[in-house]
Image 1 (cartoon, rainbow, N blue to C red):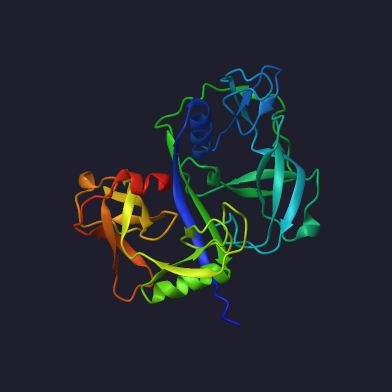
Image 2 (cartoon, one colour):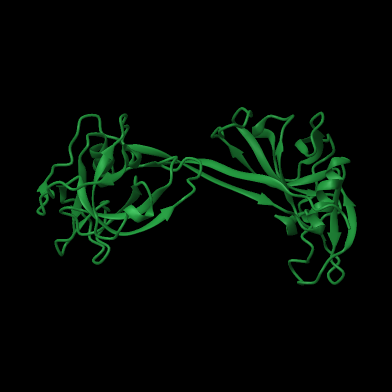
Length: 315
């Protein structure tokens, strides 16, 4: 029985978005310790505010200010906080309907334990010491036994000095990946600087990377076939945005490459040629980094371009 491969895998990227007038006012308001909602056509105050009425789909813009105090409508205890969560000690996830609001806001409650949390308990906002115009400007909620805030929200223009017009939201997924038999063989072959696929016993197509089953016929595959190392660019894109933690200068080219003998194109970076000279049909070969277990990039072989008919089924 071969060793089972297993490795941590992280998928991470920053998501950048611009803000419309409603979201801009809401986040800028948090920076100024002001919570804004928006009034819908039927008079409901939505917190957080949205730009369109969820019932009528009409555009919304009637901003109002609600209180920093509220009531827990439901909750769940988190005994083991994870990386980048709002608090590093056990806390409760809570939905809080702020005084003057008609909907609840999701955030966290700093409490000593689950016995200290209940539906209907009164809470208030604990503001972050440093605020930048993000939902994290609310550090958390905390228990509160003082006077309730006004139930009738006050009109607000939504205008602030130096408004927040865009945000960057980091997205990250951490998990452990355990490849199956076919992918394990593929990965181990890469350690030897070989590329191995599997042939379908029915349609006879060779798939790289192998999946253990033919995606067309749905039958299991087992026959290993070594392909490449050279291949043909079938299609490509020019990347102009530099990725975080990726030491590659832009612009650069990422392409689908049909390795010789394969019936499925894999992807890889093209280098060794100006980005504006990369083209469909370009013949390329792999370049391995010293000590690496995968191809760093592909470069032109100097061969004549492949005829379109030889790779058109893989575009």
